[in-house]
Image 1 (tube, rainbow, N blue to C red):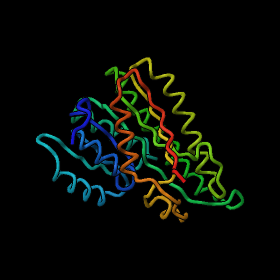
Image 2 (image 1 turned 180 degrees about the horizontal axis):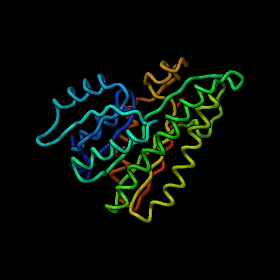
Image 3 (image 1 turned 45 degrees about the horizontal axis):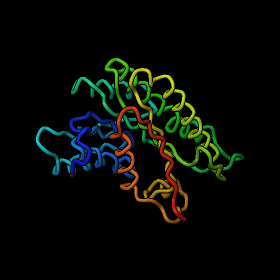
Image 4 (image 1 turned 180 degrees about the vertical axis):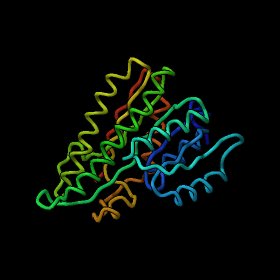
Amino acid sequence: MNRYGNLQDKAVMVTGASSGLGEALAREFAREGCNVYLAARNEEKLRQLAAEMELTLVADQRVIPLKLDVTDNTQVVQAANHILKDYGKIDIWVNNAGSETPASVLDLSREQLQEITAVNYFGLVYGTKAAAQQMVQQGYGDIIQILSTSVFTPRTNEAAYCAAKAAAEMYSKCAQKELQQHGIRVIPVKPGGMETNFAQNAGLQAPKNAMDPEDIAELIVHAVSLPKNIAADLTLYRNG
């Protein structure tokens, strides 16, 4: 169901789209009539998701799976160029890909630190730059930064993850200050614990009263639909 109207035919990139909040966002943008690029490392899951979503698309609407490692800047640039080749524009870019490996500050390995930082910080930076370079030329666009309440919540055995997210938040604030003059909104989203496989995949205990990623996705898409003179900053807590 198309609720907002002003998102129809938008070209949207969602990284980390193979599951969790990324999948929920992809579905929500598609429901609004957007052409959605599904990006993640797991190409098989992307193809399965795309095939499922295609069953509900309207005429001329597309869902395009793209295998993408956000830690590789060359791949990120190529993904942006793929969208430009298809549509000549990038309307919305969602930096959602994330990774977590819990480890004590005493035991954190160099490899763990590099992977966590590469995905959660550098991947966001690469995506922001690739999208913004095109958006500056077209004079508009929305960049959605999926962060976490970890940006302001210290957690045992998650120092690297919290630090990477905090760095990503400050980068996003600076990017918003710089890019707003070009008609670009950078929208930070800091959700608390969600009912996804993220915690399980990281070997963490699932949070109590976890939020439904579909509810979070609806709020994010609503924020994007707001008039361009309104720049949302979403912090979403679990109730309890």
